[in-house]
Length: 400
Image (cartoon, rainbow, N blue to C red; front, side, top):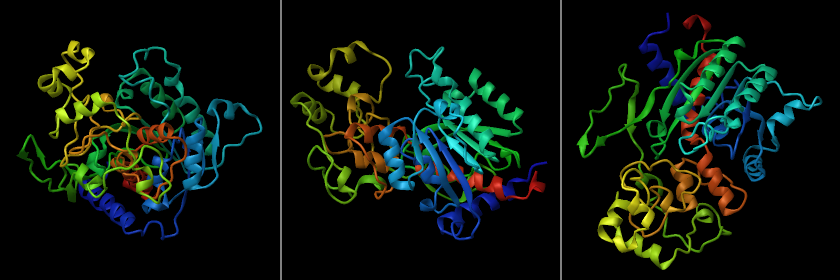
């Protein structure tokens, strides 16, 4: 039998508190970490000492040069540029020994935004991921992806291969807002463990809760078997994340200390500015624009009568942001207008909504940095995944 909910509350909450108090990093127990398809390193950051954790990144890989430069600027020169398939086929390459392998094989093959999902070769990049798990001797792995991966044919293949390698598995879709990220972003995680069944600790208890919905107060979770910690806090909001920032200046990366180095604007057209002013209230979107100023509304939006309620939408101050994607600086791509200023959000604001600390270093052009921000696993969400992994590596096996 698995341990009861009382044990889950006690142990998960204890690890969460110990990490936040910086006790895990100082207790001497360390674990070696590999990050594949690492991007800028948002997931590594959640597992790292900078977030109070006990995992030491020793090797990483990505095929994007600027992402590799960003990763190495923050975690040391061990992220390797290249195609993981080519790297593994090199007979002279040895995968380093590790305790944990994490990563997000490119998810476009599963994304609903990909109209050519069937037969997309990117759906098979979990195979080299598990090959690295095998060669490294890792006890635990974590695969991150879009929610659509769960229940797919490839999901079944992943589980089949992992079980054949001696892993027990568990999976869940998690919302970043439930773990302290000021963004309502949903991602799927598949965890494999050779020691304990990951069901013992995963999914982790939620540290934050939705305080109200449609203006109606929601009961505060009591933490007694309902999936929340006893001391759960309200969701963090856009106001919490960005309200202290001044209006942005300029349109280029700025030679200043953070946070202002990434806090710059764009040069919208006069028509775009008129559109911003036409929908000044929080929560407005393209349908409000069409109602208020049809002469400013693109014809394609008028023809598209359904869907896309977040296109050209304003954020709410007192709610989490919607999913931050790679082109957050284009309001026609989603709900990316500032709650009160007539502009899209800046790179710094997007990074904060992803829970990146201001001192995290980004390398590359404006477009490349935006891609790194939008593609990242929110570090605060990754830290809660790391809490569960830490327990899998440290709890006594008799708990199962």
